[in-house]
Length: 284
Ligand code: NDP
Picture 1 (cartoon, rainbow, N blue to C red):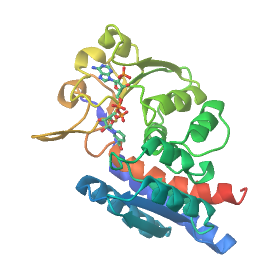
Picture 2: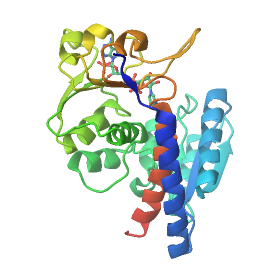
Picture 3: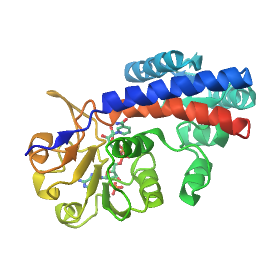
Picture 4: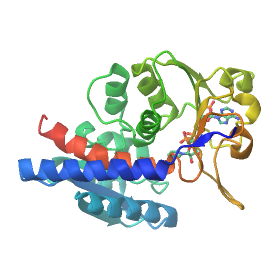
């Protein structure tokens, strides 16, 4: 029997509606509207589309859209000053520096300048440390979206064998902690893992965040497993994930499609993080 599909668009819509309702309550109670400061540097067309989508989603959720578009030749010092201004601005709840930035800029240094309480992408070292220690803070959006999808489908995580393929700071590593906090037994695979299919086959919950089209075949999936595909690979035939969807859906119990799985969750969780940031800044 083919796996049940996880509808990321529908779950994301639900999260967005809940955030909009919570933002309305927050604004009524505090008299302040949460605000997201997006920073777009240069004219990369893909980045422009991503930022436009995030800004539209903010407006729909009742979050103030505080956008800045800086020229491609902006200096590191100017950008540092801009981020420092946003850190100090009480109207700004969250700061999102759209990556990648042009090559003459030091992206790591710029990200680290963002106040941890405004770090809605959860990318600073302080946010990563808070996550690892399990103390309140802002968690990266995509891994949080993965957990949200699993919860929506009541996937049991306690005691479950979870295998993550990929160990990036953006997805794989934060997921380790999010799954550990839910008492899963977590294994992480990467490019040096020996016999990846054998390790992946242990998984009750398998998450692929690699960036290699269709790396995960049916031989890497335990019958009935939940398979979450974070990968977004642009091929001539269109967008494909890291999972060989047609083959794996015959083996898995639950599976995310690409597109329409994890992708839509990222913006939904960005909105939630912006509200969380506004609360953190008020000690709520
Ligand atoms: P990175 O390139 O930063 O990390 C990829 C990871 O995969 C690395 O840990 C790498 O191992 C591992 N890897 C690479 N090749 C193999 C292989 N053949 N076998 C096993 N492991 C391998 O990618 P990201 O985590 O940033 O992104 C992963 C994918 O998720 C991409 O397709 C990206 O587009 C997508 N993505 C989707 C998002 C969404 O909103 N849905 C958000 C973010 C990313 P090693 O460390 O050893 O090099």
